[in-house]
Length: 578
Image 1 (cartoon, rainbow, N blue to C red):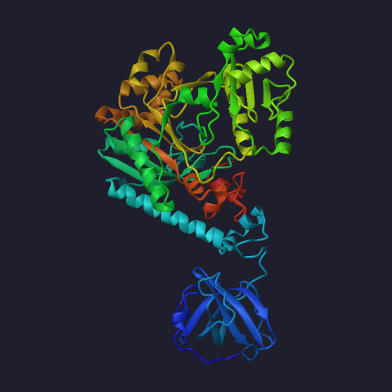
Image 2 (image 1 turned 120 degrees about the horizontal axis):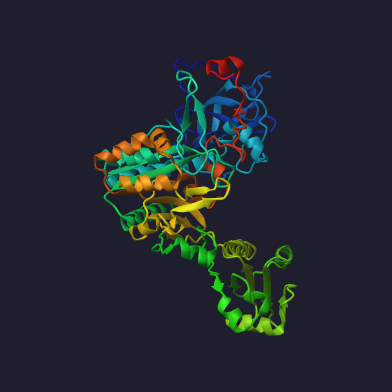
């Protein structure tokens, strides 16, 4: 090895993705990890990698001592001359040059990595989560973190230019009812007392509006102790926003502009105007409050038809609905046959209109040629169409057909990943009945403002009260949720009463908040967007973990640091636990 001394420690004059043909002849110093080693007898060819890219090195065997070992992920520093590469690699930016090494130094050795540190790795998700710091060296994860950075930067710039002030709110708060279980943190200094990790900044952003802040935003970590979801972690990042002196239409207009701006800036995609439908219509048309409207298939109600045509079995049902799947040319027959068998003998039936103008249909006892023709005519079906039907209790019937609708779209590849269809859902119910607790609970949260025209229903028909709330749905995914907040203390106290809170509970949980209502609360409202979901949607990636530096698995466990873990007895004693 050439042991020519370098007086001043310089790890690099250039990075590993920087050098080009214009740099030929330059003496350079590079540092990075070894990606590949190729031994050609008298020469070593080494790919050296850092954050910025890969550069090929040529090292003469004479420069390497016998006991000088190199391997994958060893960290090295080299000095050498930029020369033109004979066998060029146009797949990488540095592919026209290589470094003729005159000096090599080992900075750190490495164990053999548990999976290949390459774009296409052989590591499964669990292994890559255990060694996440190695996974981050791979371009797919590294580039995802760059995408996240760029998105967050664009979000901050947008809100700042539009007069919003970014303000931090506390993470350690009291336990308040916000729709999910809170993570509880014991206090060492306040014996037998606990903090809760904030599920959202809800109360604090409202207090900021009471404090006279006109427009607030924050990119904040939120914590919810809930069962695993494919599209949310137990700790997740929220784009939280609030505005004073606004109504529903102000919020929808401004944040439609925000989402359009993000799609344009980040992906160069121009979105169409966002349609808006009520919660009740969403349930009626799609069986869900987060419908994917890329592929149509709206529900058709058939109760009048079955009454007129005297279809006995269906006449007594609370609801009969159907959907039409147009011309199933992309039909994956095996998948569809398997799916059709699964829904046999339930409150479903289906009719397939074949191209030879005959019919295939499910084994429902009441289906015959006459009834089939009634339905086919009503739906104006043509050969190739597939009809699905559901019947029974209203809520369950809509929910079940909604699931079938989505499954059919998956089987027939009707979800175009290049298409984005935003949709506002508004006017959610204020309350829903909890059968287990036998009391009402908030659909959104207790601070959501009822619609003025429904206030008279609060006493006798609370289930019928609608709210000034709204969700933004894109391709069937809830991206954002918000509402106009209550700014009248009498209405706020009335909502607490309907939620079953006693005066003592209101005082202990929300005393500080109710007190603030004595000092002139402005009308205000806001929305919170899931940052992780938004990135996933923009990048058309279904795995939310790919855009989080250190994610947890589907059971809320960090496999790398092995959290959660048991506490030592001394630590428990310090926290006054027995």
